[in-house]
Image 1 (cartoon, rainbow, N blue to C red):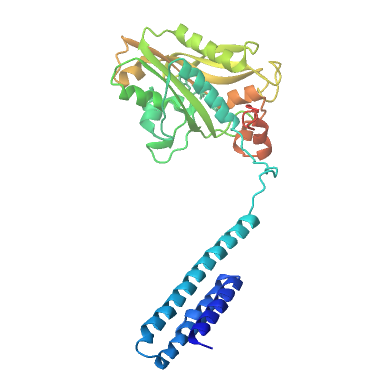
Image 2 (cartoon, rainbow, N blue to C red):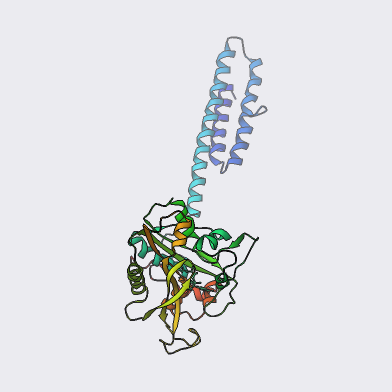
Amino acid sequence: MTQSEEMSQLKQEALVDINEAQDEKALQDVKVKYLGKKGSVSGLMKHMKELSNEEKPAYGQKVNELRETIKSEIASRQEVLANEQLEAQLREEKIDVTLPSREISLGAKHPLTRTIEEIEDLFLGLGYEIVEGFEVEHDHYNFEALNLPKSHPARDMQDSFYITDEILMRTHTSPVQARTLEKRNGQGPVKIICPGKVYRRDSDDATHSHQFTQIEGLVVAENIRMSDLKGTLELLAKELFGADREIRLRPSYFPFTEPSVEVDVSCFKCKGEGCNVCKHTGWIEVLGSGMVHPNVLEMAGFDSEKYTGFAFGLGPDRIAMLKYGIEDIRHFYTNDMRFLEQFKSVEDRGEAEC
Ligand code: FA5
C-alpha cells in the first residue's frame, strides 16, 4: 500500500469512527486514537525516514492537512452531540402547562387588623394623620404629662406592667397625645390618630385581655367644642355598626379630659337584654373620650386660653367583637387557624376579579 493510500484509508476509518461516536466520552477516545501522541496520525510520521529530502515537505504537509481535517470533523461531531443532548434534556424536562395548578393556601387578614384599617380609613378621609408611639413608655408620658402625678389615685384605673420605676409597658395609647403636643411647640391645629398595642394587668375574661389594642384620637385647634367630639363619635358609630345598633354616651372620668364621656354600644349577642358577654348590662363599652384637660395642653406648651381640643381612645378588640359577633376576646390572641380562616373574604381568595 502506498503512503497516499495508507493516508486516505486512515482518513476513511477516522471519519467512520467519528460518526459512530455516540457521546462525549466515545469522541474523546477517537481523538486520542487518531490525534494523540501515539495515535495513528502521528504514526504516519514514521515514513519520513523512507522519503527523500525533496519529498519530505510535501508529505509532512499532507499529514498536517489530515490532522486538521480530523480535528475539524471531531469539533463538528462534538457540536452535533451537544445539540442532541440539549434536545433530549428539553424533551425530558418538558412542562405540561395544561396541568391544573396546586391550590395555593392564602392567609386571611386578622379581624383586628381589618377593624383597625377600617377605622384608619375613616379618619384619613376626615383629614387626620396617623402617628405611632412606643409600646415601652416613660411613666412621664403614660401618666404625668396626662395630668396623673405619681400619687394620683386614678392611676389605679390602669394597673400597669412596670419594667423599672420609670419605665412601663404603656397602658393606653394616650401617651401619644402628650408626645405629639410636645413636638408641635404650642402650635395647632393637631389632628391625629394612633393605633397600637397596650398592656394592663387586667384579668383575662370574655371582654378583657392583658394585652389589647387601642386607637387614640386627638384634635387640638381654636374653637373645638364638645359638639365636635359628639359629631365625630356619632359618625364613627354609624360607620362601624350601622344605623340600627344603639349607642349611648355616659358621663365618665379621665384625669386628662374634662368633661369626659364613655361610649357604649348595645350588645350584639343579647341586643340589650343582658347576657354573659355584656355582663348582664346590655351594653359593651367601646371607647373613652372627652375635652382635653387644660393642664395637659399647658404642660405640653399650648395656650389653653387659645386652644381647645378633644381626645378619644377606642378599643378595636371590642369593636371587632361587636362587628363580627365574637363572644370571647381571647380568640384574637390564641392564633387558632379555624377561627382565623373564617375571615377569608372573597377579595382574600382572589375571586373578586373573576
Ligand atoms: C383609656 O384607656 C383612655 N386612655 C381613653 C381616653 C383617651 C379617654 C383619650 C379620654 C381621652 P379606658 O381604660 O376606658 O380608657 O380604655 C379605653 C377602651 O379600651 C375601652 O373603652 C375598651 O374598649 C378598651 N379596653 C380597656 N381595657 C380593656 C381590656 N382589658 N381588654 C380589651 N379592651 C379594653
